[in-house]
Image (cartoon, rainbow, N blue to C red):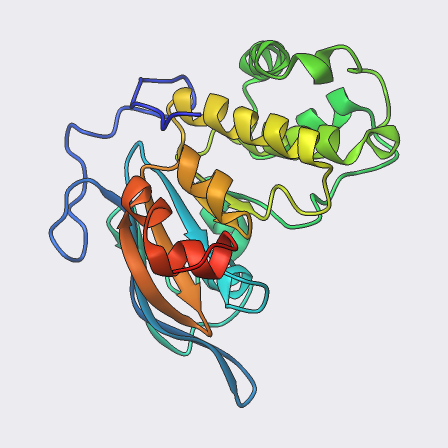
Length: 265
């Protein structure tokens, strides 16, 4: 797999002209976390992290279970209060904003576990993803475009989501999120619980979505695949960012290889 470029897409509106300047003056930054701390009661799960995702990038945040990755996403999406620090999205401070407001602003998340409506068909699940929209002809057009992007779903378009395999459900979850026409897509552990062959297919799908022009922050335990498809990466341990940089450099970093790829440093 190779990291995507930055093609224009029907899912990403033009953002360069008149783009808002971020909190740090980086005109390319779509998402920035500055010294973000998140706690559950007396337990500090995220300990003052800095992170940014530029427009058009596919960036991964890797780490073991319990490192604080999902908590970070919950802070970004307003599902968990941020104790200190700030989250900027599209040049605005959105710290603590409710999730429904962020979706309307173009920030969508595919949660761990996928959250399918099992009794609804694939087509009905996709329609649910467009609940913030009222452009019916465009919604139908986007559904057909997503069926071209996800041919496995097209073959099963009238099948209920609860009867799909785990990998097919993951594809449906991504397609449903794309129906909100996001500028930024957050993916939480898309390979969780999948067979190796289906993991490969899901990551190929992530690359397809990125090539459509959608900016992606990928949260993942499978460090090798995550770094292979990403342009940049962050390594999280015990609530802190311990390493960051070019994904290829991290993939060959001795400490990363020892900790996540089972190789000696």
